[in-house]
Amino acid sequence: MKEGRHFGTRLREARLAAGLSQSELEELSGIPKARLSRYENGHVEPSIQTLARLAKALNVSEASLLDDGRAAVEEFISVLARRGVQIETKEQAHRLGNAVADMVRTVGGVDRVSPSGASTVGATL
Image (tube, rainbow, N blue to C red; front, top):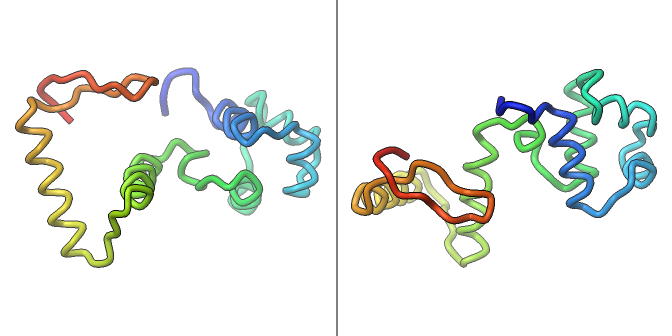
């Protein structure tokens, strides 16, 4: 987990990005506002079932709320889909992964991506 970004922080960020108040999220998810506040303040963690309800209400993946590495893959695939690229088979995914790795290697790798989306070039991916 990233320093300072616990589940509650990610939940709050997702709620605000969706333009929702805690009261509105309560209506959508059925989870009491007081409990939502406790999640956001880092006092408690949700059950798996509650996590699913929150993700559905916020229209985000469970992985993104958990800061699971799959969230980055989901975003990558989402960007491709928005740009009209569809991956329908494992073979296509494999070929695309190799192509992306070759491009990254060609430019010297990507050390990190800034919040603005700008990449810094370095030696690792």
